[in-house]
Length: 614
Ligand SMILES: Cc1cc2nc3c(=O)[nH]c(=O)nc-3n(C[C@H](O)[C@H](O)[C@H](O)COP(=O)(O)OP(=O)(O)OC[C@H]3O[C@@H](n4cnc5c(N)ncnc54)[C@H](O)[C@@H]3O)c2cc1C
Image 1 (cartoon, rainbow, N blue to C red):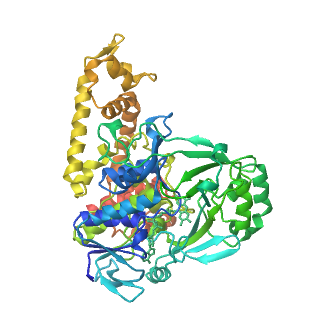
Image 2 (image 1 turned 90 degrees about the vertical axis):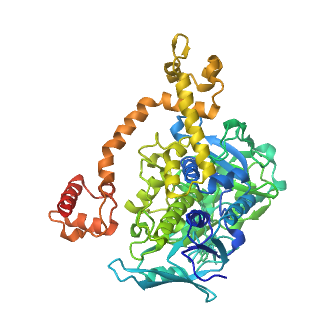
Image 3 (image 1 turned 120 degrees about the horizontal axis):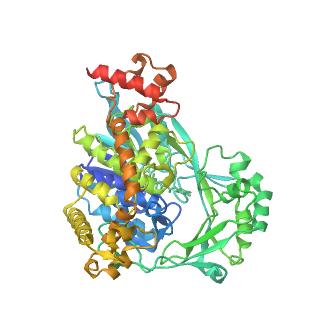
């Protein structure tokens, strides 16, 4: 085994896989150290990728040359475009995964990367050395629990729910990062010793049931889309001609009822969240069934989606009833769901508490402010979800590769460029008080950040960094040219006596109807047609948003050097001095987004920066 790498990625979850893939593709030598290499890419909870806003992020990761979109396209067993009845800004692609095949796909893709080695083991310590500058110490090596020492220039910590992980089911508590896997104990202490402030959060998962023990006739069928849309732009060619490689399946919809809610209320004192056994905060937007019953007491039922965990497995995931109630209570709850009277529980639901690092201590590159070459990505930064983790993994992987190559150019996405930009900006300006998950409502430019145009927003950038290979680049350009051809073909076409573009602006029209009416447009690829339709239909709104983006560009483009001493900024309020020193904003635009900061504070800072430059 080699003992020296540019980058060591610690943890092979969704953040770690994407970080390792991005860094290796940029030419860095990478070691991906994970406790169990067979579990690389494992889905800890819901066997699905994407959804509202999350699906857009997967498309962005893909447009930048990431691996998540490719993996889910090959492992998806049901594809659905969510929110299709609403505007295209909020459409969210989602796919149910064969979770075993998904992990295998991630591992297969990683195996194709050159200069990437997977090393089994637990990282227990990260060594640093004085960097000789005011920047503080820098990473020198990582140490595994078995004593192996690996030297490196960067470490990317992507340890998910494993740092001092503690699982709860009712009164029972077990150490572990997720069921059947040990917790990582050493690393938290090491991060604390470096001076990083740690927090503790929790998340939970529902029970899994045995397929044969369920009476599915009592549930409503939930089929996937008739014409599945792939996540990866590499598969999105000729749009509706793509066929998922795996057999497609249905899910089922059922519901809880008042009898179940009564049992939950009667047993709340045995729920770790309510008995005081868990003190940390869980995701408000992904609540446990006991949380739902308490918080939405007026609701008489909550949905339960039964989702297969794969094609060759018996396990059915009960989406909607995440719980850490004791096993006997879980049994009672399940038996009272119509269709689950005889259901056999293969695995009980549980909650897991874990250590995280408050993300005010990282820059937008995801490098820690305290230790040069130390990057954090994924759940450790207080987020929740595979897609949020993958997005951060890509950002950390690129920045670490640049750092290791001695290129001091930061890879930072803006809020108007990508949901990934929104995610990172939110993390560094508003420390999460609960596990952070992405929503379309978090993005002020969501009409711009659509799932259909992620390539137009990001692929050129990915190419300039070196992440986008020739194949992806050729496809991107072909699609761009076809859009231009389609727009040109539209000129001069008329429907019902009016220009085709004006006709397409009407709410009741669409590209399919138009191309049926105008034979000259029928050769245009339907996917390209959809792009053109969106551009034309929403032109006015998109222009308005473009103008907003232009207005804020000046503030976003005014970068703040790391070396600014806020204590010396004349005329700045003390609170603003403290906040700026803590958050070290990347730009004036970002400074304005820090809570408690006023436009007047930012003006004072802008004057200071101008004077400093002069
Ligand atoms: C019980 C449970 C319930 C969840 N519920 C939800 C939910 O409802 N909604 C949601 O969006 N998300 C949920 N998640 C979270 C989701 O799984 C994570 O957000 C996502 O997997 C985070 O990705 P990650 O890459 O940061 O970490 P993970 O996917 O957790 O991967 C971490 C990896 O790091 C490895 N590792 C850890 N420490 C070390 C070390 N010291 N040395 C070497 N390797 C190490 C682990 O072996 C693992 O491979 C849940 C997770 C769990 C465990």
